[in-house]
Image 1: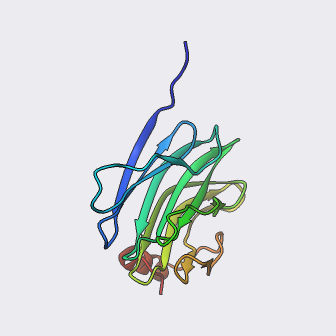
Image 2 (image 1 turned 90 degrees about the horizontal axis):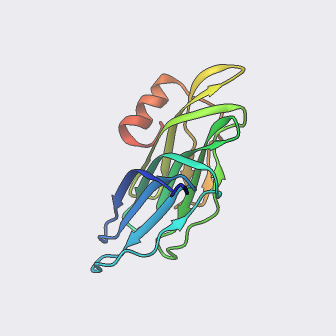
Image 3 (image 1 turned 45 degrees about the vertical axis):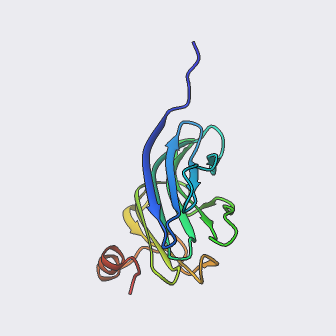
Amino acid sequence: MSLLPVGRSPQVALDGKGDVVAVWGYSTGLQVAMRRSGSDVWQPPVGLSGVGGWANEPQIAVDGRGDAIAVWTEYKGSDDVLEAAVMPGASGVWGPVEQLSSDGSNASYPQVRMDADGEATVVWCDYDHTTGPSVDFPRFRGHLSAWVERPGQGGSSAELEAAVSTGVPS
């Protein structure tokens, strides 16, 4: 008997031009697919995470230009880590996967929002085996060009409230 890969937790986002980006977890990693505005055909899915990793809790956000960011948790050995990848709308090509959470902790419940200027905020719960639970939220600025705040810094409740309500910490 062979086990087929299992898809779960699909999410979709629509940009200002009508392009649709879909993400879903798969037993062999995260999958993403796009359908361009005016087309009835989905592009073939692209795998973003490592083969063999269980991708869970995928989230996707896009801005008006079609820039996209996907975040998800992936089981790596004994912990769930938070990973992210970005796709500039102009190229339509996904960049490399980057781990956002710290090694030795369990990331869960990620959320991502992107404002009209392409600034994304990722929020997730993190349980560090040494220091206990926390909430982390790095920002990605400059139309998906660089992380401003690195993970593991946590934040105040006021910053978290601003991140959740507006997508951008104060």
